[in-house]
Length: 227
Image (cartoon, rainbow, N blue to C red; front, side, top):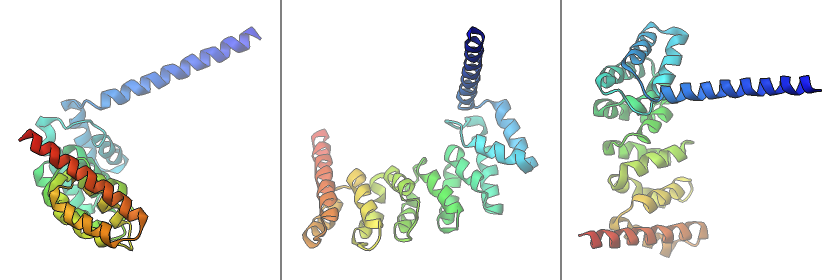
């Protein structure tokens, strides 16, 4: 009996050690080194399965390595343009500069890769993409959660492009437009929101619209106090 218990204990200790090692490896991955990035670049250029793993790894770093950012971003963008590589696009959420963020706008309405592009803008602020992002609210996109995060990240610069979707009563876009304006709307949104409250008989619309109005008014008062 004792031997079985001790054997089981040794197994648990071994498993714990492996988990700890895996955790440490993951933590190390968050801090790229020039040597590791050079290996990733080499693997991406070489292609094959190594490319797939390297691309995914490049998207897992917590921040780009400044000295390598331009080189990596250009390489990733080339793959996006040449083959619409999903993993390369997604990894731009870490490595993209304004150059790639500008070029990526055209991929927001291009098949499956558009989801990866939306993800990039949920991590990188680039207000010029707001109009193209907002257009997805009316397209029946299934990535509404990430899309909402992307538009919220663009801040009040996205407001003009989101307001028109308050009238999209037959699609989820109205719900998400309300959610976005609740977080980033300014006094510019108050009039259309009040009109929505007055015209709608749907409690599921009126209640969040009133909440959005309340949040915006609170922000406006706070901004005036800071002046």
